Image 1: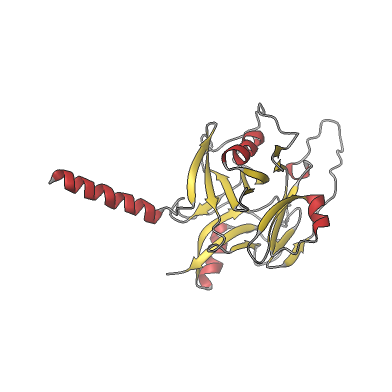
Image 2 (image 1 turned 180 degrees about the vertical axis):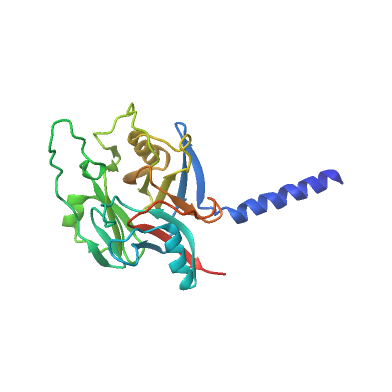
Length: 261
């Protein structure tokens, strides 16, 4: 009797875990770092890219949630997109619902003094993550994207391009001591979009850029992957992460929604 009861409790707990945790989301470890991994379901997940309601104002997850709730929607997934400027506008290309908000940025970074570090966005090659209206997606090097004539429904430009056609960015090194929380996006061998963000923990979530690129290439099998941002990065996955907190300020936020109950 006790064995049957224990088995029943185990099955109930198992079913509860499946109910609370989306099957396309998981935490995966790589070389001592834990990452939230969310695999977009192309037939179910309509991805949006949102700026703040007013141009040049900071964008927060809590604000996005409130805006969506007024429209009868709730967040299923949210993560900050590409690198942005101090005026809370994207540094590079930002396309939302087919409308270009900021243009493609092909300007090379010119150092003003010896020893000045090149910002991540300008570590060429950088790249563009895009989604067409039919849900097909890709990641292209920025100059290649400029020549492609792709009409995106959604696009965000950032840098560096972590993995380009199966090769890790040449500037990145495995022994780098620059470890941060990271987030990025990859497209795997089947054309599926995979969003990745470090767990919200300074001990478990820190990685250098090479290991982050390696994670996309070797673990997630993404031939192309784009770095989005660093320590400020944040992800929300309903049933996987905790409740939405008063997050850092961002420009673009990638969001997947569903009808509110």
